[in-house]
Image (cartoon, rainbow, N blue to C red; front, top):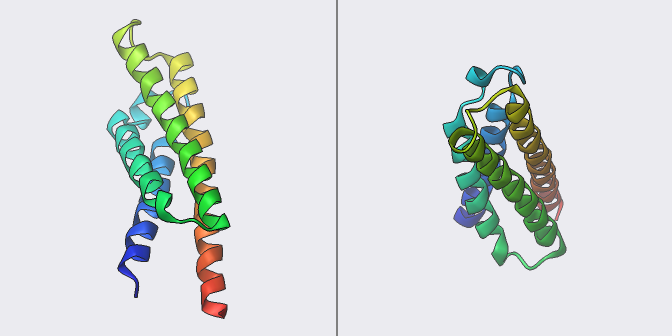
Length: 127
């Protein structure tokens, strides 16, 4: 067992599950989208992106690209949430739908990263 691969897989999976946990729920109900889960998803996605910098393979480049896309979308979602909460009168349905839409895009990027991770793991077993 390679500890580096375990840590890498842990952060990729945690990033995807936190992101999915934030996105799931009614789009118009702010009580079903915990902002702290969004912030945790941002932090874990950034850590996962940093871990992917060391891989110089082609699949590593695609891992990094998907993680960067997810991180950027989650950072934009968090920034939009903070803007709506601090500058406007609070997060309403329209602003919440924008935040959740950005987080859903990040969830798709995290899903692609998971598929790549599983595919890479399966190909290692065949070698």
